[in-house]
Figure: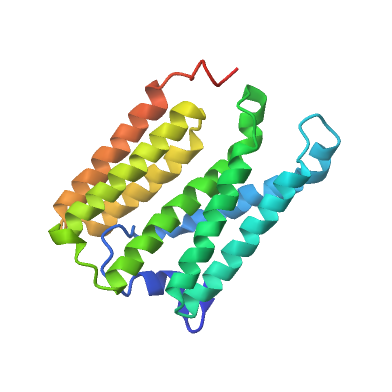
Length: 220
């Protein structure tokens, strides 16, 4: 997105963020928008069925979109902390929307657009924090930037696998795999620790997607 004479990617690339993926990763926005359009398109038909979109879901969706737009505008205006606060509210809103879907087989397909959006928002939230810390010259308690990148990616993987198991969500870790492969490509041979960790953790999530069984406690 081009605002104030610079695109969002241009601003991200101003600082050496090891967690930042290759530029092509951001084209996932097109996929996100397509799925959000499908969510909106199904709004009226679903209101006539037993799988209708509730007023609570509508409010949470609108709040999420408003927070996203205002966060992006503040980001382009250099108000990074304000942007992060709004992005945090966006993440909370979309997570709350995500949780409104019952863990039933027939609801998983309806949850798909929100799951993709939630996963991408989570990644952007982590990336935004990394950007802010680098911008403020955070020293990382003596640990190297590469090691912190690995720690952060490990936390992201744990979140993705948690949702894979407890919410039987395949879409969420797939988005993270897309992003982590982009991190590996973006860092290349210049940061082998980060590149290796990104590829390894992508493999871990792929294994989780393929071999994690349905959680019998939740999914019915």
